[in-house]
Image (cartoon, rainbow, N blue to C red):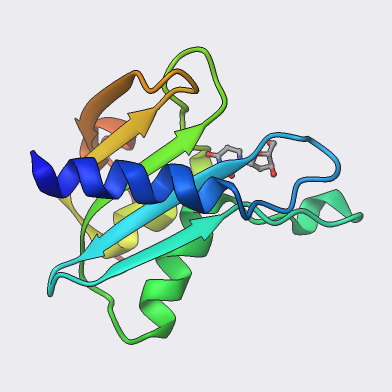
Length: 130
Ligand code: THU
């Protein structure tokens, strides 16, 4: 699908901006909002390692901070042999802003992709405080 191909290309491009002096592991993400806007992000590390933010959350928080809280699709690229696997924190943040059936495309360093949903990544997620 052309839309997804474009998100994949933008996720790869976003990884080039990663600030990764400690892990040397760049990650890029591209998010499409329900109204068709695209936001990209990369991982940004810190000498106090716990302050690092992942590429996925950078892209999602950029969208939300621009007023887009309803997100439709995400692509994530990492220099991994198998398509990169988002961390638990990013999965929980995805569950907040994407519908469970939203498409997630994960991309390996050689371009191999796998498609799944937000619910596949985080089944039975905690989403409701009421
Ligand atoms: N990282 C991401 O950006 N996304 C993930 O889903 C997993 C890990 C980053 C965090 C850190 O900068 C580096 O990859 C190594 O863990």
